[in-house]
Every structure is written in structure tokens, then in C-alpha cells.
Image 1 (tube, one colour):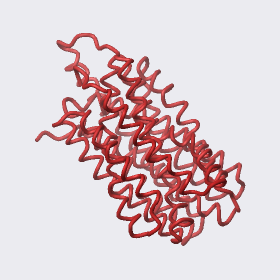
Image 2 (image 1 turned 45 degrees about the horizontal axis):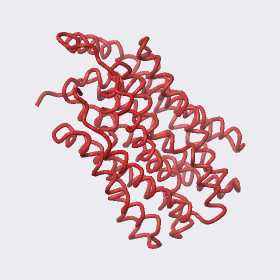
Image 3 (image 1 turned 60 degrees about the vertical axis):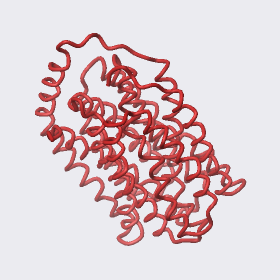
Image 4 (image 1 turned 90 degrees about the vertical axis):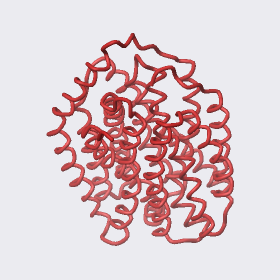
Length: 385
């Protein structure tokens, strides 16, 4: 079997560095609640700050990447994310932490659209595998980030979050040095693809229905990422360390499941993978959010991970296929918003948790599964992927 282009692995490294910083913020919420006296709403608002700029800017950067090449944005993403987490480690002011969370979101917005677009262009006929490999980097980051942040906060001291800045700066430098060689691969792949192919078209109707699927997946992803540590502490009476471990376990499983999802989709089609994922999401989330036993909740993380991570790369591939003329914009929406837009509702869910309890507020997760299932069954396979 022919190996994937090395650029795929390069961007997977960048994806890891962006998302281990993103994953650190939810893992630190119990620390902020316990040490700074924050409410659920205030804590969840830090996630809102993180995704606010990211949600708005990712489609914008994606739109412009269709018109002009912006590859230099890619190494800036990990750099900004690393600096933001380092800043959190040296601040006890809520609004400084809020600002740092926004900078982390900016780094995510700089990285995702352009990197996903270039991965799609150098993937050839193995788009599912390439984009799932790229996604594994991000999911690995979300798995390691909470563990690293929790170890820093609870064992070494909060200022040791400096390690995020150091690691990300080194990765950004490595990516910048290798970027020209990868761009040459993109040019060669584009030349091969252009020969004999007609003009690509946009199917906005299908992309609109896919956007509902993206929203549903984003709710599952972001709200799980935000509230699982708090759920473990306040509902299951576990320690903050156990909550961080649960979140990391979810994303470690997610890294494997994401890769498998891409391989399956390359062979069976992308729509069946989407439909199966959301059919699993409904009962998995319903049982999970109503569990009161830590062991049962831990077991239920497996189907929860399947429902969240299996559709990841199929959504990105379908988005780029539906918007063939604006693949960069599609990447910004599908890859970026599938992990961020749900965070815009995090403060609302946090407010509901303050009013009626966390279990009641999290019922939205299985409702999102219903919404995603309905939308997935209205989609059709694109003519050309």
C-alpha cells in the first residue's frame, strides 16, 4: 500500500499541538472552580471565549484560502495556542484567563482551514485515510492535553503550564521549516488532478443539510469536552484527577475511532458512517448523562466516543466534495465548527446547570443525536470525492 504524503503527518503534528492546548482549558475548569470560586456559568464561559473567535474566523480564513494561499498561517496556529496556555499559568485574573482562552481560539482558527485544505489536496484518492490521520493528531492532542494540564495544575503547580508554550514553539518552528517541501507536493498533486477534470461545482443544498449534522456533532463533542470533568466531580462524586482521566480516555479512544472511521468510509461510503454514528449517539448519550455510577459512566464512554469521533473525517470529506469550488471554506466550517460551535452554547448549558442541575442540562446531548440522525438520512453521496 502506498504511503501517505509526509505532509499529512506534518499537519497532524500541528493539529496535535493546537488541540492539546484546546483540550487543556476544559480540564482546568475544576481547578478554576475550586481555587477561584467560579460558578458553572463562569467556568463554561471560558470555553465560550475559546470557541468564539474560532467559530467566527475559521470560515473566514477558509473563504480566503480559496482565493489566496495562506500557508504561513499554519505554524502560527500552534504558536498562538501554546502562548495562550502559558499565559493562563501565570495569571489569577478571570478576565486575563478569558483573554488567553480567546487567543487559543484564534490560533485554532488560523490553523484548521488551511491545514485541512492542503491535506485534502495531497491525499489523492485516499481522502478518508488522510483526513482521519490528520484528525488523529487533533484527537491525540485532546487526549494528552487534559492529562498534561491536570498534572501541571495539581502536581507541579499552575505556572508549569509553560511547557505548552515551549513544546508548541518547537513544533511551529519545525512545521515552518518543512512547509516549502509540502507546498511543492500540493502543486504537483493539483497538476495531476487538474488534467482531464471538469470544473468543480458547489452543492449548497446538501452542504446546508450537512451543516445540521455538523452542529449536532459539535454539541456532542464540545459539551462532552467541557462538562465531563465537572460531571465526574459533581454528579459521580469522583476527584478532579479522575475527571481529567475520563476526558483523556474519551479522546484516546477517539483517536483510534477517528482513524478507523476514515478507513471504513473509504471502502463503504461516507454517508453510512455518518448515519451509524448518530444512531449510536442517541442511546449512548441518554444512558451516559443519566448514569450515577462512575464505573457505568466509564463503560459508556466507549459508545459515546464512537458517536462523536466516527463521523469526523467523513464530515470534512463530504464538506469539501459538496463545495468543490470552495473547499477551503468547507474545511473551515466542517473541520473547525464541528469542534467549536457547540461551545457557543456552553455558557447557556452552564446557566441551566446552575439553575436545575448538571444532569438536567446535559439532556441536550441525546437530543443532538436525534437532530443529527434526521439530517444524516437526508444526505446523498456526492458524485465526485
